[in-house]
Image 1 (cartoon, rainbow, N blue to C red):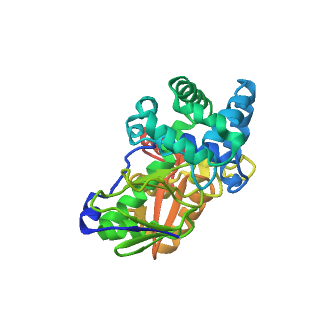
Image 2 (cartoon, rainbow, N blue to C red):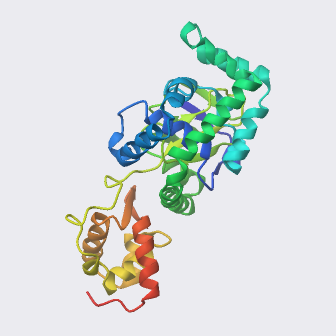
Length: 334
């Protein structure tokens, strides 16, 4: 278990990333290619991406360069996930190129250790090797991440709504508490229960940046060097249905978008609890439960439980239906 220690100053400086980090998503998607854990949540992405990598002749590049440099292991170099990537992929890649050689050498030495089979990775500290690595990251991102940018942003949008509500309801304590069950907030310590490393990290007034990640799975990830600005990358929730159900299993949309359900969709646009849906629509608790279950099973909303509260948010399909419903504001009665 890894323990992150906060001071009052750290709590005041803790913030959430406002958008997906392209390099963290790139790195963690490479980890998804190295294991079957959580494959159900990424099955469609895995199938399409592995085929696309093969069709573009990128398989050898991934196997011989990217996977060894970014293994799904206790350690991979911190300089490959620079904070500048929060400003975009290009800014992140430029930061990798600008990393001082002494730092790159040190981190690559730690990665290679005593494994002589990986000694060639030390060449990535040199300008030529670093340029090749950055090109490989950019090429892989174009094939594996860029086609899913909208979907990733939508999923992280739901996550943002969930954490915003937790922060509004309980302040920074509410936000950190809401990160359960993978993490446990015992003020002033955040415990990462399933982290690959054990020990203690003291923020010492620097604060912490929380980065939700689509491709992070099960356990949160941190950087290895405690002297660097600290980040905590944690997984977003993945509903069991990652793609809309097929026509055979999904009820006809005409049966879903009635007046009552259109009202529920509108209320879910910015996130709403079950109690707020009751107030917004005038429906009973039982009706809200039935409608939200139908919408959830159809892949139109997501529902996230936090303590005794359930927050409902739109999926990409739900957002599209709401836009259509707003274009035609007189839906048929249920």
